[in-house]
Image 1: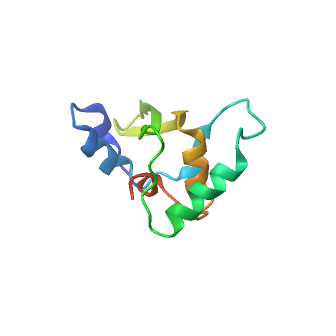
Image 2: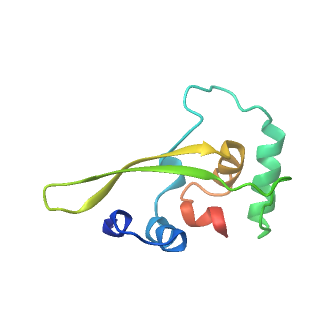
Length: 108
């Protein structure tokens, strides 16, 4: 999977397209936390996503991701990691829907 476009001046929509196959399970979510603040909310979000509903939070806030990249010896951009900065419960809810879920699941 090539991520070279991430180092170009591209739109948000184009960035999502480049990252769509990145696995959700590889995203660092709430580092240092051992418990979710509201587990029932996570399960509710997962059920909504599984039934094909688009999840909207009360404030309609986005899930904020920080993507760490580097360039390897062959000048290809690689993703070193993705961290969820905001929206941890929503991300965890999407994770409950499938083990092989990808970032594309977030904007379904």
